[in-house]
Image 1 (cartoon, rainbow, N blue to C red):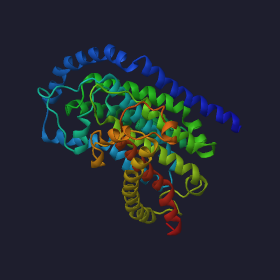
Image 2: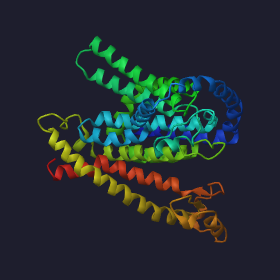
Image 3: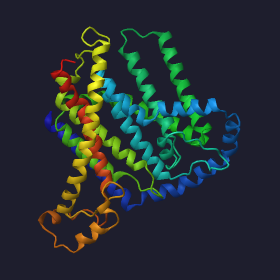
Length: 407
């Protein structure tokens, strides 16, 4: 059994590596962009009158309503919600939604940067960015709408989980839940158009891709969960996969924050997987107490939140500080040229790469000479380690504190 799993892991990593090499040699991103981008751009321009008709109904109430709704279905909201889901005893749902969100975020960001299609032009479109998060989203490319894609996948999976957890399928409950999900998806799509963040083609693409990805996830989620909780070489396999996904990411026409979001949530996924794999029997099995039960009343859960939130914030800060010190040292030792856009002022520009050119390559540097001779952004590695540490603390460190504190 162990050998067969190892073969499967090697085959999966080899496929990703083969894709990286083939897409680089064949300039796949540039070829696909040249085919798709002009058509999408024409659709975005053609959708402008429709957007203006939607925005003709603007008022303060709708501005606030759709801005709040966008925050409620955004990645930062889910990132803050998922730790509470873990600590409430619903670990299986929490880890599945975390991995599904990482899957959605990676694929959505890849398509955005691969196509590099513009958002609706402002003006004439009125763009409402009520939060810092929305201002950063406005700097990304348009197609597909990440909010629409994530809402379809996450709300759809949540409905599936609730319905399949019931002993008997209730038709009334099923119809009611499906209606709520459809209403949420529709309002999210309309809201993205109303706020001037997306055109109709972006929203339609987001919903369509969300349905496809949800269907794929429902086919494999059971196998993935079984691998995480009882598989062999889980942490090392996920580390290799995360590293390869960095290099498999397409290069956008112009730099955007999309790769930063992918780096952060890929780190979250790695931290969750590595933590759950180590502590499943202790903290994350189906036998753990759940909220509102006799062993986990509401007040105890509130105590968990009071202890847990500050702890993971401290771990996030410490992980970032450790990564800012450790990663440059490792990269310099290996002879990998790095730069930093914001985290390490001393590495802004190409000073590090220029220094490394004058050094005689050592043994370790020769071992990693397969890396292309270019400068890499170390901030993405720092971001990965930072969020991996935060996620690990959610499922390993903090539950250990709960155990010691009898929470």
